[in-house]
Image (tube, rainbow, N blue to C red; front, side):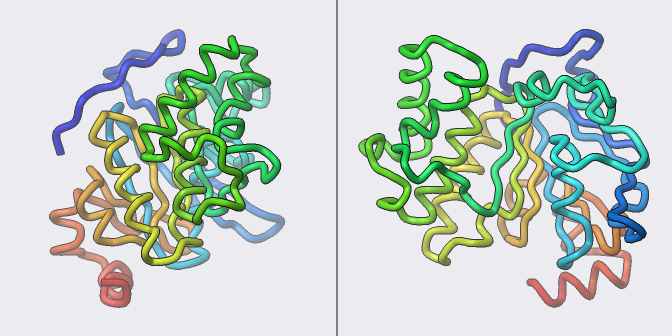
Length: 259
């Protein structure tokens, strides 16, 4: 897939020819239960990767580790030269680099769509209100919600709320976007509008990591597919070869159930 490139402010020591996200031998255990058992891969700037696999395979835990929402047990994660796994991590610096959208929209119900999008730049970054509002309105238009600025979450469909959540993450001007099963809670008729929004971001050059169960979407939008099972990467490759000629029996069994 040919995409435009987006401009970003690199961290000291990081250059665009290096992976924008790097995971090296990442392990995560909850008590005695090891969820991630040595995950390693790189994501290049402007690349879209999709992580697929059965429930309980560690997909959501993995992507949450990238944003430091879940601390790793061992291994290293870097985003634009920021070591996410460093105990001294400046989480605000990381949040400037990485946006995340969850399965649940997590919008403030007493705030309008516009106010939800404006909150982080105003209250976390302390940016100028007029500039933040202008950007928030532009982002709502970008996700095809122009005219809904004054609507409260309860007045919006699930798909509309999820697009507000995407605009809210984009308001921080991240260089990487993480999507964790963002269509799982949506009615089938609203899934497409959210996927269209993500596709447009990918085509504009946004680096995206997606945990998804939407196989056709993954086939169309991803540069690389990772199949996880029981905490390890079983198989990976570009969509054309991954879906057409999977090598591992676990991968083939999973695909036979979801395609």
